[in-house]
Amino acid sequence: MMTPLLSLTLAAAAPQALPTMPQNLSEVPVIEGWQGRKVSPKWSENVHTLYRKASCSGAVNYEGSQLLELDVLFLLDGQGRPLKIAPVNVRCPEVETFVSKRILGTLKGSFPKSGTDEPVWMRSQVRFLWSDAS
Image 1 (cartoon, rainbow, N blue to C red):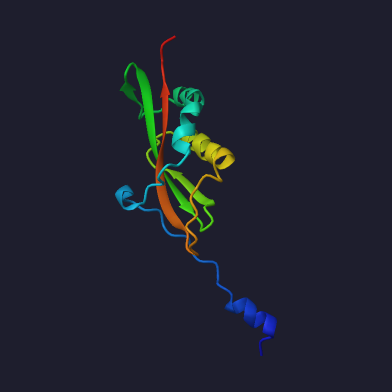
Image 2: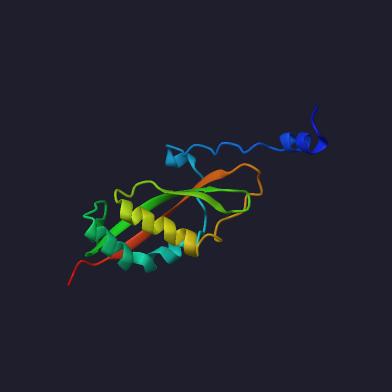
């Protein structure tokens, strides 16, 4: 026989498996007006240093400088808290780690609240621009 406390505990929602990361970015809603798009260029020198030291690839020539644009997926709970951050086209683990930590450290309160009980994937982009000129 179950005690009332045990039955309430068992009746509570069991931790649900998190949704799998989407494979098709076009199906993931964009976070409109996310401040990370405005803030991320300030991290360009840090990203440039990591990028150069690790011999990474992916940056393109842009008006005499190097431009690195990264798509980022965010798994957000209903209160807008990030459960997972997944840079998807980085090709550079050092930059991926830096970007994820910087977002968690400085932008974790910048995501929209959905108010839903289920976590949702959303996406945005961060951009970095630097010059290789000495």
